[in-house]
Length: 243
Ligand SMILES: Nc1nc2c(ncn2[C@@H]2O[C@H](COP(=O)(O)OP(=O)(O)O)[C@@H](O)[C@H]2O)c(=O)[nH]1
Ligand SMILES: [Mg+2]
Image 1 (cartoon, rainbow, N blue to C red):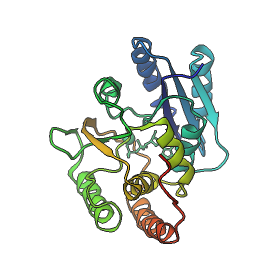
Image 2: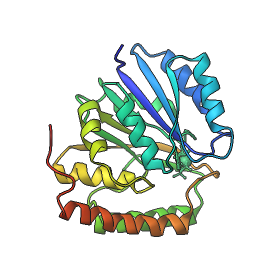
Image 3: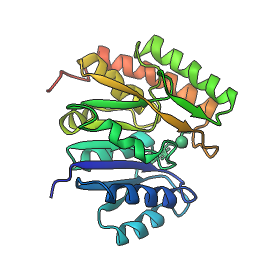
Image 4: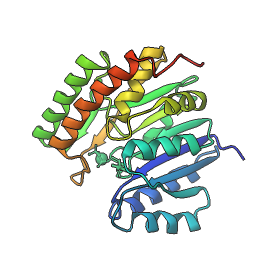
């Protein structure tokens, strides 16, 4: 049966954080009146992430554990988004830096016909808990670069909660070419250029010290990827709006 909601969780070396997040997500979803599936997409891990996801999925049939052979967060999310079947497809980090209870704010009836809804740690009423100043400053610097070179209006492209309506998810993730961390920038860049509406929701966000981001290496890669995204657009590789 086609579920109403698909949750897509990219997971890389998450053996310490994944299980407790899956339990919280299952408890929350089992209280909702809609149907759902949860896809956990693991790649590149050298710990027990995949086994943990598989064990959980044996006991919870709506949870599906997938191993992807090639690396990259962007590749994992893309695979999940395109294999999912839900009317709405929600990307969710394995560490649940934001409470899963916030999910209802992304969906009807709270939002009429949502197309793209992204959590933001920077719009009015958002709260960041426990984040070291240097991490916040680094994040703001990267966002400044993203706003200058890619997407003018968006204050936070990198937050882990993002909702896509089914047809839009298919259109955007088919077009996606960046398979690493800059995937969020590319998707929002394409959405912006094609004229899809993007709603930003303020979110309470809890800093998790166990980040997989490497500040220097990933920032340099982000900049290289932004240049690639601009070049792809100039070459017409992102095509036309489909819906
Ligand atoms: N599948 C997959 N997931 C990844 C990869 N890199 C990061 N992730 C996941 O992306 C999410 C965000 O990572 P996290 O370290 O929490 O980033 P931060 O919150 O931005 O510091 C987590 O669910 C990670 O497991 C990857 O290469 N492959
Ligand atoms: Mg995180």
